[in-house]
Image (cartoon, rainbow, N blue to C red; front, side, top):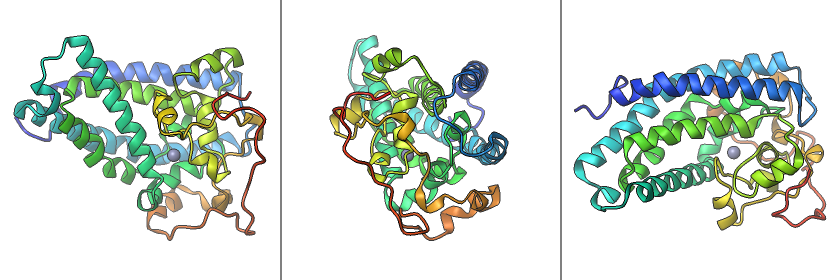
Length: 293
Ligand SMILES: [Zn+2]
């Protein structure tokens, strides 16, 4: 068995069921955010969508032809060598739950690493989008996909996650990424219930705020549990007070596909706006773990 195969049977099966399922989720999110927008747009949709799709294309190719095969190959290697959980005789449901929790914690911790100086070079391309909607959920630099291979493939392999669970989680990860980036106004009561355990559009909107302290919050992908445990949860910022983006990159003319593809090589900028001002927010009346409307 080869370590790296883009046509492994598991991946072909993933293509057959996950791709149509994710297209349905994407279409539902698109209809929802068009009919019930959460935040007011600051830029024309066509301008951002053409750029975001232009960035998503190489990134999705990188995911399908490099990240997924590498993650599957590494977890298959771990199964043959009986690493980690492969040595434990756990009951099936317990094993599955443990694997899914490990994978979601890997996603959370990888996202925190993306905000550290070196990986921010790539991840800032995602964050400097001037509005946030479904298309932001695909707007990643292909380099970020490739850079994630050792961590997102290596840690699950060492822990002994099975390849089939890894692909199942990957589909959930992609569906949740589409959902929480959506500019979708859910009924507030419903979203407040959902936000108790998972990442929702209002929760992730705070992570894309121009206020740096808010960007350093809400790193979760599926569950909000990890943000609660690590005290990085921040729910109390009203969505109409959230401005999306990074102050140092507020100029839309700097965000062509070509400039964004080259951005990892450019020097990092401080957080401040080009006029030197730094967005701040007064303390909020609600406790930090209570969702604001
Ligand atoms: Zn981020």
